[in-house]
Image 1: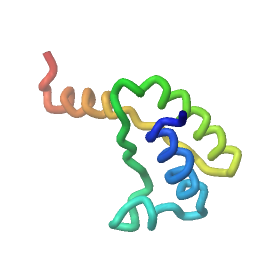
Image 2 (image 1 turned 180 degrees about the vertical axis):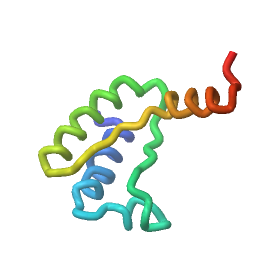
Image 3 (image 1 turned 90 degrees about the vertical axis):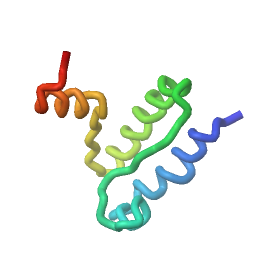
Length: 85
């Protein structure tokens, strides 16, 4: 049985990302070049595996992919504000 997040990733989000300009379907603001994907926390490792495969498929289709770590962004922001322990 395929999980709900995997169906959403491969059958809904991937076709949008494959479009020449996916921004109109990614955001109601029509200009944000990224997607936020919600998933159950206990599925993080299977999701990471599937994202690696998705990245490969998108790169083979000529897309440029950038991965951002929200943990790294948060750490940098806290350090910039001198809020680390």
